[in-house]
Image 1 (cartoon, rainbow, N blue to C red):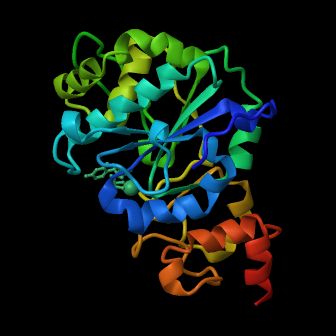
Image 2 (tube, helix red, strand yellow):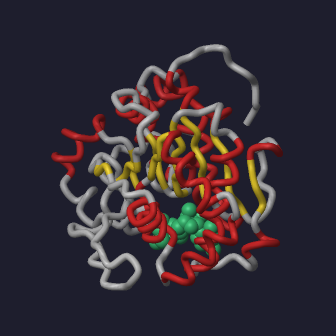
Length: 280
Ligand code: UDP
Ligand code: MN
């Protein structure tokens, strides 16, 4: 990733992409993102990771191992990593209009994301993503015993500049966010939804064009997938259980395990490398 300054004012320069990843997933996950969608927006992509990663410039990642402890898929570790998103969000609040979190097992169609966000006013408080559950979480606990919606972090979540500003008192200090997760006993995405809804009275703007690999049916119906895939904003990948294995693989399978690179070529057939692959 090269950080160069660009004077263009297209909205692609107004979206900050923060990716939560782990050194243990570099070759199985992140590598594929670095070969595809990240290439298109690389100077705006930042990483939350335990250890230094190859091919990423030093001012584009925050290391979490010292603060978050040994890497594991646990509520406090992941909440700790997500709390670090806000270090970047607040640091670059004046530079960007939209602040998006993605996991390292997601493909982002940056053009569709840009188009969608450009229809919304970032000076209003927007919390955008795919609702995790089909009903709001029915919270009975005091002091906020009201139902609220939350978005799956693993499908991608975007916050407007104004919402990040409003969240500052709750997110400026990362230990406050981590303790909040623990106190409420919520995973990071539920806690974020709770904060936004209980403290700021802002509700989720649902967008079902965001997808995580938790969606069991997304890659089940090939015909339907081909009808809608160009419209989607994010795709979740979970090899070998949930990925578009019906796509014609443009690469040798060890070079494109989850078919992310193939998907990228189907979306951008005019990229030079893809032209060659499609012709073969
Ligand atoms: N993750 C991490 N450290 C870990 C395990 C997971 O940072 O020890 C990150 C991972 O890179 C991903 C997110 O947390 O961005 C969710 O993890 P994963 O996709 O493995 O699990 P899921 O919750 O989606 O089933
Ligand atoms: Mn995942």
